[in-house]
Length: 137
Image (cartoon, rainbow, N blue to C red; front, top):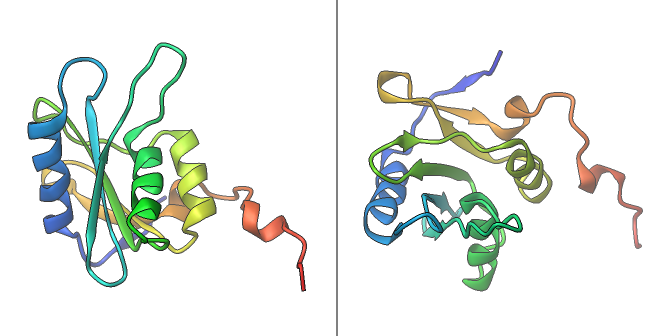
């Protein structure tokens, strides 16, 4: 069972929803993601569907954040186009988000059930890449 954290970042959800409404066009871009940096900045991204297996919005968000000098994210959310609401991260994204940001919080659920959970709760007993790297010191 996923532990609920006390605060849902509604501004972050709205940022992702705005990008989904205004930037998602056609079948190639159908989900938007938003992430909040520790300094309060919000970074957004959209998925890049391709028949060869394009990246989800959350994966694009990791790269977009780094391109803007944001190497830590506190909270992320993904929202579907056509007013589909919050979309939970897929398994691949859960693993990547956990590896990049082990203390990350993720907004999931819908309507009154919207809640924030720890990424570790979305992928229990998981392999954490950083935990298995050799010290270089």
